[in-house]
Image (cartoon, rainbow, N blue to C red; front, side):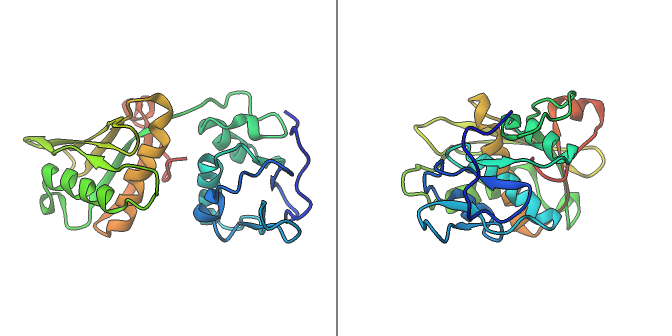
Length: 234
C-alpha cells in the first residue's frame, strides 16, 4: 500500500500527510479541519498537513477532511490500528501506507440514536423532520449545489423527509420515536456512496441545534445487534 507520490516537503512531521503534486486546491481539507490543514509555504496552491491532529476532536475533523477531499491526497503512514480501522470503515483503507487490521471492513453508519434535551415529549416526529429540512435548506452555501427538500410526511410517531443537493437525486431521512423515550433517525441514500454525506448532514444538524444529546451512530447491522456504536459518523 505504498503511496504513488512522496509527501509534500512542507507537511508537518507526523503520521498524516498530503502527497506532493496531488492537491487540486479544492479547499475541502482546510474547511473541514482548519487547525490541521493549511497551504504549503513553498507553494500556496498546494494543501499540506500544517499541524498533526492532537485531540479526539482534531482527529474526527481530519477524518472528515479525508472523506471530503476531491482527490485521495491525504494519507496515513502511522501504525495505530484504530486509525487504520477507521479509514477502512469509511471506505478509504487504500490511504493507509501500512496494511490495516485484517478484520477491518467498510462500514456505512446510517442509523443514529439520540435524545431530546427537553424530553421525548418536547418534539414530535413531524417537528423533528421539519426542523432538519429547514436546516438543510438554510445551509445552502455551495455555488454549484442545488439544495431541495420535499414536504415532510408523518404518520403517528414516525416522519420522513427527502432532500437533494445534486441533480434532483433525493435521499430520505426517517425519524422514529423509540419506546425508551429516545429517537432513531435513519438515512436512506439513493446512491450507496452518498451515505457519508447524508449522515454527516444529519449529524451536523443534531450537534448544532442544541436540543439533542447522547448521539450514537451505528451501521444497520450494529443497530440490529444492539452495538457497538461510534459517537461520530466515521
